[in-house]
Image (tube, helix red, strand yellow):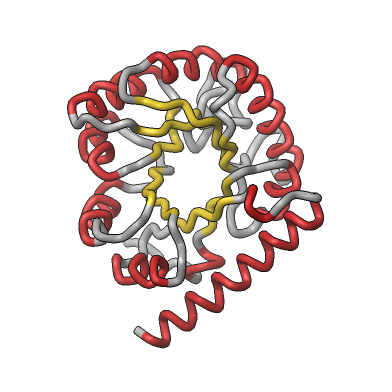
Length: 239
């Protein structure tokens, strides 16, 4: 375990240096950017080590992996983010441990999350996931609502009992006009965030950027970056 802790500490330090350098280059204070470590496919023991190293935000994208891991780490001072496409039949479980769902992209999901948050007497933070590869009304390849659908969905979240509208999230698209243009994609998300905050001033969270493109996200103005591989290493193949 000591070897693993040393490895994670070294990786975290490198990521911290990258974030700090990106903030400096953008003229932003380092404290404006929150690191979320994506712990999918890695064991609860790694989450525990990360907590010892000062990590306070972790993310998962599959409930069947996240639920037991969150239970095993329930004594730790962590905020759990759910970042994957979420089916309504998993909502009850996810609301039990997640502090924030970053992948809200349809009204049916808002209704289900609200009902369950009220039932469990929890306040659940929500980000509207934006699909920059979507057409006028279609969903993106990896989930998300088209930019034209943000306002309606955000209003729905803001009015829903038990839910708190925190902002927007995107994944750099693999297809469409923003494919291979991460900086442009993240700048577009920031423009959409500015529009959203006119109606919902408190919804100022912008989650964008991962291991390969966190610098572009910070330069564009992201408040949160989601980093997995650069901290935990290359994930083993599943299946």
